[in-house]
Structure formats: C-alpha cells, structure tokens
Amino acid sequence: MTAETTQTILGLETSCDETAAAVVRLGADGRAEVLSSVVASQIAQHAPFGGVVPEIAARAHVEAIDAIAGRALAEAGLDFKGLTGVAATAGPGLVGGVMVGLSFGKAVSLARGLPLVAVNHLEGHAVSARLGADVAYPFLLLLVSGGHCQLLEVEGVGACRRLGSTIDDAAGEAFDKIAKTLGLPYPGGPALERLAETGDPARFELPRMLLGRRDCDFSFSGLKTAAARIAEGLTTDKDRADLAAAVQAAIAAQLAERSDRAMAAYGARHGASGLRFVVAGGVAANAAVRARLQASAEARGFAFTAPPLAYCTDNAAMIALAGAERLALGISDPLDAVARPRWPLDEAAAAASPTHAPGRKGAKA
Ligand code: KG4
Ligand code: ZN
Image (cartoon, rainbow, N blue to C red; front, side, top):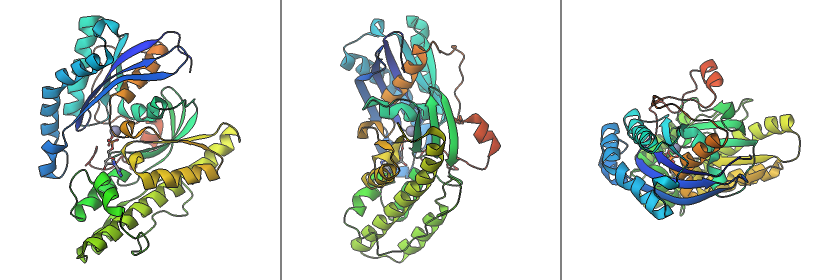
C-alpha cells in the first residue's frame, strides 16, 4: 500500500471488555509504527459472573476512556495537535461499549478539527499482522476470536471476500465454554492453554467436526458437547489437563484443516507465488494453534504471519492502523456514523448465508 502522506492516528477500542487507546504512525512507505498502545482490561469486574456483562462493560468504558486516551497520547509524546486523525471502533460488538469509544472519537474529531474513521473491529484484526511485519495485500486471513471464526480473502483496504465461517460457535467461544466446564476461570482460552501444557492430547478421543467437508466452514458445538460429557466423569488434575490438551488439539486441527482447504482454493485463484496466510484474533495467541497453522501454511507454500501476541487480543493499535490506512486513501466518516452491533466484513456473503452466525451470543459470550 502506498500512502501519500504520513498519518498519525489516535485509535480507540471499546467493543467488548477492554478499554484501549493507541497512537500509530503510518508512513508514506506504508510501514506502520506503534507509538503507544494502552489496554485496560475489565476482566476483574466480569470474572465473578463468568463472562462479559454488557452493562458493566459500558459503564467501565465510560469511567476509563478519558484517562486511557490521555495515557496513549502521553506515552506517544504527543498532544492532539500532533495527530492527523482519530479512529474508533464502530462495531461489531456490545453496542453500549461501542457507543462510548465512538462518541469519544467524535468529540475529539469535532473539538480538534480532525477527520474521523468509524472502524470495523474485524478490519482492525485483519490489519493487525501489519503492526509487527511487512504484510502486503492480498492475503488469506483466518480470523479467530471470541465472537468470530472466518476465512477471508483480503484483497486490500476494506475489500474482503468470505470463504467460510462458523455455523455455530466461534473458536474462542468454544475455548471459553469448554474451559468453564473444566472449572477454569474466565477468560477460558488462556487458562485452558496453561492447563493443557501438562496434558496428554491423545488420551481422550473427541469428534473432528466437518472433517473432509468440501466447504471452508467451521463447527464447534459437537466438540463442546463431547467435552462436557467427558468432563463430568473426571476427578484428578491430570484428567482435566489431558482433556484440555485434547480439546486444544481438536480445535487446532479443525482450524488447520479448514484453512488448508481455503489455501487450496486461494492458491488456485492467485497463482503459486507471493502467497501469504495470516491468522489474527485472540485465538491466534494460542501457541498450539499457531504452530499447527504455520505447518499447514508452509506445506502449501504460503508465507505465514501471526501478529505479535499483544496485538492478537483486542487492542487499539489495530484500530488506529485500520483508520490510518483508510485516511491515507482519503476515506473518512461523518460525525453521525452509527454504532453497529452487527457488521460483517463481507456484507454480501453474510446476507447470502444468514445462518452462518459469528457465535450466537456475540462477542466473548
Ligand atoms: O480478539 P479477542 O480479544 O476479542 C474478540 O474480538 O472476541 O479474542 C478473545 C478470545 C476469547 O475467547 C479468549 O478465550 C480467546 O480469544 N483467547 C485464547 C487465548 N487467548 C485469548 N484462546 C486460546 N488460547 C489463548 N492463549
Ligand atoms: Zn476482537
């Protein structure tokens, strides 16, 4: 991507349970530099309820956003005058929280005369690998988070074509729900990964959902049910570690098998050179998932990129970069931009397959 001017953007992220602000500079050469990235997690406030409580999240964002944005500017060594624009997540997500960050962004835009970009959170995840490495468009993307599980061809800024998505739960949601049945604290994904470290993945046999199916869709509900049934009969920590390891291996295997199918289709369309496979979203922080996907990508002749760990889970640097890329192309949004609880990246594909939900209960259910 070639930008005509350098962009220095304040990014704001409030779509779930992290209040985040960051300053990112996108150079005229298309390289991104993170000047600051501040993430205030609300985990402690939600943990007693075993998941994110939307009303608590929205209130916590209101309380935190001012100070977090101020810290991001201070750590970048800038004030508002040093910015060329402001970018805020406008969806998809818990709409009470989204409205907090988007309204804050609009206020900054109006008060400081800066252009506003209303960023799709998923577009943020899609560009997140560009925060740590030179990743040119186009690329094949596996987006795996608490609310989403989809394979996308990313042709350029805002140009995505969906190849497949989950027909029930998102991968992160599966990690979280199975972790809960294993008695692990919220958020379950990282806790399950730690428990799996000492487990034997071969001890329990779990269903390999959709294996061999000719499309690129995902399904985790059968795995969830099977794991819950096994978990009922377990007594020792070793038992639980073995089941955690088996679950992690089964999720990684399904993600790799479906991605392999998408790589074959993508490779057939794009030719044999310059192929790249990117994994992004919270589940991309899982080492077993990363390793399995890297092996699949390399076997298909794809370069493999995953974002630095800090930019896998929700953050505002990815939102700032997505905004910077749009502003570099002269794209901005009006002050009446709306907060959107649902906002598919490939609207046409989403309309054609309305049953392919991004995890039924939404972000990090
Ligand atoms: O991208 P993210 O922070 O938020 C959404 O946009 O949903 O992803 C959060 C999800 C949660 O489901 C969390 O359990 C999962 O990513 N996750 C992990 C790991 N770290 C976060 N899952 C497995 N292993 C991890 N290390
Ligand atoms: Zn996310």
